[in-house]
Length: 352
Image (cartoon, rainbow, N blue to C red; front, side):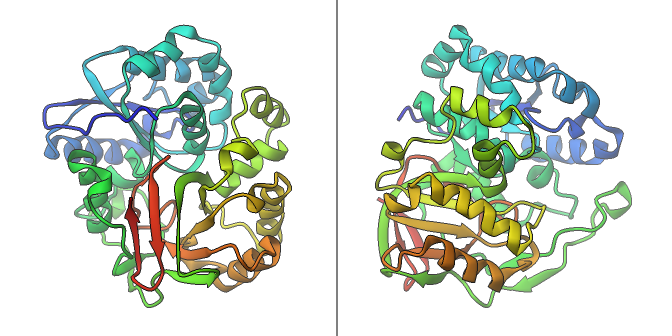
């Protein structure tokens, strides 16, 4: 894979709204100011791409402009990193504009940039993976840099700092704390701390060998389900198949699949449907293991564990549960295509 360079102080980083346009809304003005301030404290120069602050309605109606912003970021040699504003649910609509644009495709190969985001950014990550660029399932602008507590959450801040020193330099270990999702994101809640809990479980091995290894590939289960079924948008499955967004069975062979659930907190019944859709692709038969993220607020925690074992129905496949990535705060960074060794006994995910 093409691996982007680490960030350095003084670098410009682009902020893009590839899914939801909420960063441009007045109710997000305090997140915008905080995120900008914190990027500057990291020594970075934030560049808000031309359409990134146009708001919800404009971004929803103009996927071609979202795509244009991403292309512009890749073609600008002064920009070294790209940060997703937040997720959403229709990132897939940008894909035809990008995958049919030879200038963009060449820009990705000739001007690789560090790309970070999670949730519906899964779609972008799959696209880049197909193009051979390593990207990072990690912090996004509103949720992390724009976190309205007095400081960024320490575990997440440390994860973002690895974009400077190298994501693979340190093992991934459990966060000592986990945080409840906020009920109030408004300006009135500025500098209020999240409700925190001591992590009592750590990484849980649900089945299989204590040690397993493979290259990382995966994303948000809801986004993957939408790509596979078109349940949310009627044309999504067709676009996904046309541009081969969900990796092929040959691509999944030997990989560690990482999966996590979104803020929608799918019911056990829906969660089972989502996992069954992934199972129908045959991927569970060829991967070397699964890493599952902590559910937000630990909702359906025990139910999910039971359903995973029931749906996978393969006792030899190692499954690690309760890892800090995705929608449950705080979050680490998972680099696509990087080979890792997972050890539940040592409570580590180490890079090979």
